[in-house]
Length: 384
Image (cartoon, rainbow, N blue to C red; front, side, top):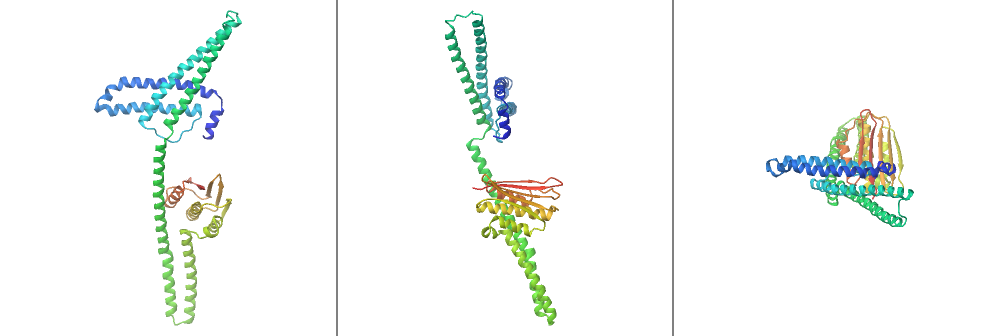
């Protein structure tokens, strides 16, 4: 239950009572829908040419009634249901059961009201001394038994109403399993796409960066070898030495983007500190994680921070970055915020790859980047 549901339930006992009374009216509406639709659409439902359209109209009204019942359970009883679209048979079965339960509830509430009227008449008779005192204990005993049965009936009908709502508005185990299979298939496909995209990016970095620098290095060494001027050869060798250092730095950077070895040797905190040091922008890092993290969670958190920081430095026109990594109640929360211009595409290649990597761990990735900024990337990773 969410906080809103608790607020509704704590607002008083009048809301559930009003919800039960409204349920009696919606039950009558459901019964009338079955009756009137049966009369008006019965012939069209039997004729094959008009069956589809008549059935669609009948189901449209049934869905509106079901939506009203869901609203009633949410407002008056504080129920919070997950996103779920019940099947047509499930809707019709629910409305039929609700019509029965609602009408029976109306009868029980009517008997309770009638009993209260009799109780008032009995008290009035006692005050006016028009009731035989010898019959009073028997009437009180009988009234108490009937009141207990009536209240017990109301409690049972309220429980039945709640159970019917859960059966209709909450996915069953089979649907949850099918949804879970779909999520796993989607996350697996996203991971495959992310891995392929990462491989293509590494190949592009090696081809366009490291390989071109190595070609330039080979040309410098060749020129130095062929040169007959000693000073010219020394200058070319010095330039080749600088080029070799830049090649090593770029190759190390590519290797870190594939997998940072600091995660294995130093841990997530030091690896993120390395990301902050290599970033061209100032990065403020807050790390509040006690104990060890599962290796897949560490890797996913690292790439969320690394990719977000790299994107902000390249495209966000930001002046500062803020990174926070916190573990609370078995969940690792990662937040990266910049003060740039915003407008980042949540479905971009890099962010989509991150979303697939996080989803593979049953995590959640959210990107909030309105025009004008700031851009906030938030990830939640279960530490299981």
